[in-house]
Length: 219
Image: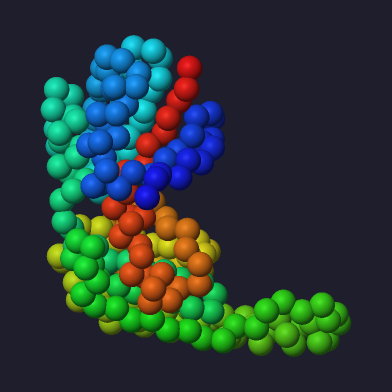
């Protein structure tokens, strides 16, 4: 599958490269744009080509323990490494939690709770609706936190990272549950943009959380 390019804030465009395609992408960058100089940090590997093109490669699961002279090979090996990852996906009416060994989902739980949509009613009807919807939301958030505590916490000592996704506000609300405090130091800054959490959506997340985000700047 070809990487999908998206505009990047401040110019350039983003592409997501799977670990399996990364070496080919890096080699092709040099072939297309000429001699490449490399700078590296624990969070990023930057390629600057002779024609002025640059590629800023974000390190998945940082830090990257490699010097600039070996950054190409080091980044590829780092991205390809299998990791144990916890995933928590939350939207107002649904949630999913999973434990991955590499790309293999080894434990999962998916659930939903009814949360009413918005209404055009006004006055007292609107207020009653708002109170009912707020109560339903609390139940849904509590159920998601219960599942995260039951499924993810027992594996927290073995996780390389915890990846959250879905609705940011709802997910953050779940993660404020005191029981989930041991997961917070493992929480990745990267959030997954996913539809309503279902098992198939959960199973598809390794393609997102394993990918290397690359910012390309054309000159």
